[in-house]
Image (cartoon, rainbow over all chains, first blue to last red; front, side, top):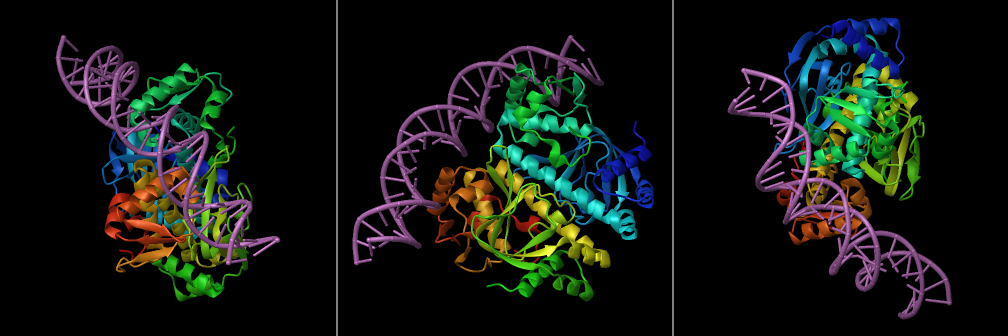
Length: 244
Length: 244
DNA sequence: CGCGGTATTGACCAGTCTCAATCACGGTGG
DNA sequence: CCACCGTGATTGAGACTGGTCAATACCGCG
C-alpha cells in the first residue's frame, strides 16, 4: 500500500532528473494537495472527451493511456508506472484526447489543476519543469511510434519489455531480472499493435530464444543484451539518468 | 517570398487559437528576434542528437520531423507548414531526439531559446501557451500513431492528405480543393509507414475512386467527404477553431 | 466442480514488402 | 531542336508478416 508522500516524492525525484529545482520548489511539489482513489482493474478513470480539472499521479499498479478509433479499437499510447503524473498535459489541455485505464488494480492521487497552476505561477522553474516533463512524454511516444512502425512483432514486444524494465528501475546487473507486469496478451497487443494471437506467438519466440518470459504476471528477463538487440532498445530517449 | 513579421504573426495567430493573450503578450511574440535561412530541398537543418539553442519557425515550404532507427530508415513524426514553430519543444529539451528536414525548398526563421525563455519569464501566460502548443503537437502525434497503426494503406494516406488540407486552411466549401504538396511518394511513405511502391498503388486506388489526386506537386481533393470517410478523419484533435 | 477469462496452437487468408523492369518528365549539353 | 540522363512514378510477380477464424487447454475463483 503506497503512501501519498512517497508518491509525491517519487514524482519529484523524476522531475529532478531532468530539471534543477530549489528546495522551495521541491517543497511546493511535495505539498501538492489531492485525493486518493483506488481503481479496480480494467476501469477507465479518465474517459475520452471528458473535461478534467485534476491530474492523476499513479501510486501503485499500471495505468494505460489510450486513443480510440471510431470502431472502438484501442491503441495504447503510453504506460504509466508509480511515480508518473499520467496526464500532466491536461493542465493545459483539459479536454482529454485520450482515456486512462487501470491495468490491474491501480491507486491514484488526483491533484487539482488549480494547485498545479498555482505552484507553476509561484515558481517559473517548476512550470518549465512541467513543460519539460510533458515533452519527454512526447519523446517517448515518438519512440513508440518508431518502434511499432519499423520493427516486427518480436522486436516491438522486446522493446516494450526492455523499456519497462528500465523505467521501473530493475538493475541490469541482476542475473535474473524480473518485475511485475499485469498486462494480458490482448493488452500487450494494444500497445504494440498486434493481435493477441500474434502476441502469443511472438512471446513464444522470445521465450524459445531464451530472452524473456512472462510468468505469473511478471516479466523475467533471461538475456538483457539479447533482448535489447532484438528490440533495438537504447534508453537515451527516456532522458533518465542512471539508466544503463 | 514570405516576410518575417508575417510569419511571426501567423505563429501568434496559431497560439491565440488555443490561448488567450493580452496585447502586451502578443507584442512580445511579434518582437521575437531571429535570423532568416533558406534551406534547399532535402537538407537537414536540425540533425539527430545535435544540441540546439534556437527554435525554427517555418516561413515557407514544408519541413518534416524524423526519428531514425539504427538501420538509418526514417519515420516522419510530423510535418510542419508555414507558421509552425517546428521545434518549440527544444526550448526545454535542447538535445534533438528527432531531426528536421526541408521537403522542398524551405525558408525558416531561427529564434534563440534565450529570447523565448525571456518572454516566457516575463509573461507566464505565454510560457503556458508554449507548453500548450507542445502538448497539441503531442496530440497530433498520438493521432498519427493511431492512424498509422489501425488503418490500412489507403486510409493512412487519405488521413494525411485530409489533415494537411485542414491545416493549410483550404476551405471545404471549395468545389475543387487543392494545395501545394511537394512530397515524393517515398516521403509520403516515410510519414505513413509504407514502401514507395505501395504508396503508389494506394494513390492510384484513391484516384480511381475519385477521391484525391496528386498532380504537379499539388493535392487535388475531388471528394472531401469520401476522403474523410476513408481516412476516418475528424479534425478535433488539431484543436483548431474555424476548421470544419 | 464448473465457469469465464486468458493462453495456446493450427490452418488459411490478406495486406504489404521485395525485387525488378519500364515509363514519364524536366534539365543539360551539343 | 534533339539526344541523353537522372529522378521519381508505375506496374507486375512472388514472398512473407501478421490477421482471421476456430478449436482446445489452462487457471483462478466462487
